Structures are given as structure tokens and as C-alpha cells.
Image (cartoon, one colour):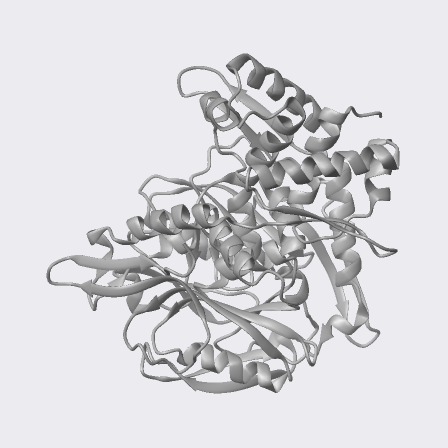
Length: 271
Length: 271
């Protein structure tokens, strides 16, 4: 079947978009669309400019024998601002406050539309780094971490709170959770991570940073390098956290249970 | 900024594709692309035909005041076959066998590329049903369930193995897990699900069906109707499971620890 330029560009964008950060050879498209290499090259130039003009991410051509074309989802500063402010607005609804000054967030952190965008914001922040895995710990951070991994086209690693028999031999560590004030365990199958890998850590919430510190310690067991840490929400207090370099999307300043007030805002460095 | 037809179709497909099952008005595109309604209508006709010709899903126009256009990800039978057979091949690698005749699957069920496709296969299977939520239980089924929810454009509900203080008041039930032979608990915040909702249940693995049965019982607490159950892998034995109607993607016939043999195949009804 022969497809016209109109259609080729649409289909090319769809395929690249469905497979972020995956390299496709020009041959893949010449076969798929039954078109000459020169036509596909021109299609790519048009698609590239279009993505840039509309700020919908970046199409990159990679020269050489292992070359081809790939799509990098990049969220612009304006869109980041809009997305994060929208999430802040939702999180500021007074009826989210749960006794103990917690915030009910399940409807947001499990909403595919929202977490897909948050994942792309993280991918944008860590774009350009060589990353082998996205690492998170169960449960609440999984959707955001998965969408980050999807945008970066790398596998997700989920650290478990207990070791399951179906994982084979595991590595376990203990860590102090600042949120609960308790010693907790996390474990992972020995075969889950290649030695010497480069990883980013993604989680939904950070208070003192104990859980993130636990994940960093776990990565040391695999001689893995943590090249970035992203959290959806970091609390403003304590300002001095156990870990230093991390990228929060939102800062939670205050949950005032008595007056039903929530103060949460976007990380100013990102918007 | 005025965008030519070439570009408009590409951008339209990208936007629809990024937001499966979300309805966009024609006005949205006339504003975004600074183009006449008639031009956008023609673009949609071209995009629609293209998706059909390339079997990349379906673009649907909804008439009337609340109308517009949406993209429905539909995986063709051929693609379903290819995707499922590829997963079977991976799952048949002998070194996946863990003492106790379990299969190591974390690298597959947490791989965004794979689970995105499996989620779209589930969305295809349950397409046409009115669905308010996708429901799963932590942990291993979350990535597949999230991608299913993403393709269907509905929220994900994650049932927890224990009740967390940050969820507010919860509903808990006990159920018998056929895999572990133990009584287990699952719980969910009372506010997570609207009364009378229609849900589909998605999980990674089903042996006797006890966990799925537990999820069905939990849904009764919310007067919710289960309109479908999808599992990535169902074991062949026991053939008589606690639940009747479910859609497995793969059937696991045998894990022979001694001879290092795994027999797993795609559900014939889907391919």
C-alpha cells in the first residue's frame, strides 16, 4: 500500500510518539510506507519542524550505521507550569485533608492522564543523561515512575516492602522512614539490576528523605550510580533532608487541619 | 501561527494519540491550528482513513453538541498475536524458573514498552463497554492495569494489601489466595470509588481466582458492577477456577523445574 505524504507524516508521528526514545531506522519507514528514502527524509524534516513549532517534544535524527530517528517527549516550561498548577489546585481542595494532616491523593497519583504528564516532566528534567533504569519503591510512586520509564524508554524497577518467594534470591536492606518514624525493609531480586547501571529514582512523596536514602543504599549493592532523584511532592519542612540533590515537582508547605488550609506550589525552578 | 495540512494531520494525530478515548471538540483544533472548521473536518477524514488503513486504531467522530473527535487504541488480531507470542517467547526462557516452579517475570511486567501494548490489548477486548474505573491490587499488576486505564482514559484504583493511615477511612475484606493458600486482606479508601460504578478488574496472574474473587467482593461493597476481568497470565490448572468470565492473554500450562521446560501460549480466542 502506497501512502501519501499527508498520511506518512501522521503515521510517522504516531509511531515515534508511541515509542518515545526508541530509535527507528529509515528503512523501517521506507518498508512500512512503501516510499523512497528521500521522501521519508523529507517527511522527517517536516515532522521535526512541526514538533518544534508546536512545542510537542523533539524529533531527533541520529546519523551513522546505528542511526535513525527517535522522538523525545519534552514538556515546555509553559506546559510544565500549567500542568503543575493544575495539580496544585486539585491538591488544595480542603476536603482532601485526612485526620493526622495527611492529604488524600490516590485519585491524582493513580490518574493516568496526570501521571503521564508528570512522567514526561521528569523525563524532560533528566533528558540528556544516560539512564538504564527508573527505580521506585511500592506502591504509590509506581504509576508516576512507570510513566517516567515509558517516556525515557527504559525498564522500571520496583523495590518491594517484603521479599516475595516468586522473585528468587533477593537483596534486602533496612532503612528509617521519616514519615512513619519506623525501621522499614525494602528488597529486590538479585537479578533485577545489572551491575554498574545508571539509574534515576522516582517517588511520589519525600519528607525527610529516608526512603530515597534507602533506595540509594540499595543501588550501592548493585554498584549502580544514581544520576537523578525526582519526587512528585517534597515537604518544605524539614528543609534539611537526608539527601541533597533531588528534583521535586511540587513543594508542600502546610496542611492546616484546623483551618482546612493546604499550601502547595510548583517548584519554581521548573516553571 | 498557521499550519499546513501536512502538519495539521500530524499534530492532530499526536494530540489524539496522547489522549486516548478523550473527546476533543473541533473548536479545539480550529483554535490550535488557526484553521477553518471545514479544513479540520477534512483533516479528520484523512487521519481517520489513515489509522484504519494502517490498523493503528480508530478515530471516531461524535456528532451533536457534546461531540467532537477521539482516538480509540485498537490492537488488530495480527498485532495481538505478534505481541503475545513475543511475550511467550521471553517467558519461556529456562533461566526464568525459580525454585518452587515460579517464573521470574519482573523484567517483563514492569517493562513500559510491553505493558503499554498489553494494556492496549485489554482496552481493545473491553472496548465498547461503559467503564468508569480499572481496578487492580498491588503490586505486580499495577503497570499493566495503569496502561489499560490509560488506553481507556479512566482512573486506576489500586487495592492495598494493608490499610494505610494516609488513605482516610477504608473498607477492608479478607479473601483466600489460591496461590499462597493463605487468608489475605485487601483494603481501599471509602472515597476511592463512586457508588454504582462500572469497573474492569486487571491483574497479572490468576491461579485459582481467589484474588479476583476478592476484588469482585470488594466491588460489591461499593455497589459497583464488574463488567470485565482481564489477567495477563492464567494457569491452565485448575481449569475450574473460583470465577467464570475472565479474559487471559496467556495460558501457563506447565513449569517443569526438573527439565527446565516452560509451556506458555497465547489465548487462542484473541489471536
